[in-house]
Image (cartoon, rainbow, N blue to C red):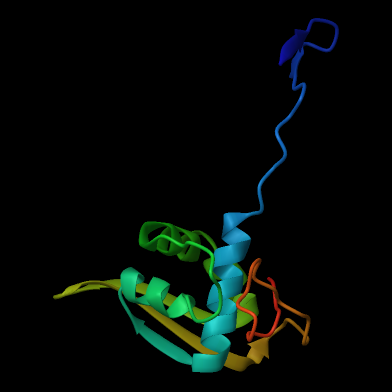
Length: 123
């Protein structure tokens, strides 16, 4: 990285190759999972365990919660209702799929490194 005095800005040299978007992986995995399951209610840890049925990517419970919260609007475009609430036993994630509101128009959704048997799809 160096500072270009003419342009008055920093210039990045030898930029590291960007890794695949973890947000995309989490959202894609959630989409594939909930499209087949229709409804899920449980903790982030339980959701991560269920997501292993559609991807072998490592997804952490705190990451999945953050990505769902940050991308609630994006989820709604794919027919997924998301609610995150605190109940007496802890925090619960509630996901519900409504195919009539799914605007993906049948596009393929893929999760990087999806399990061999799962259909390929990506948000």
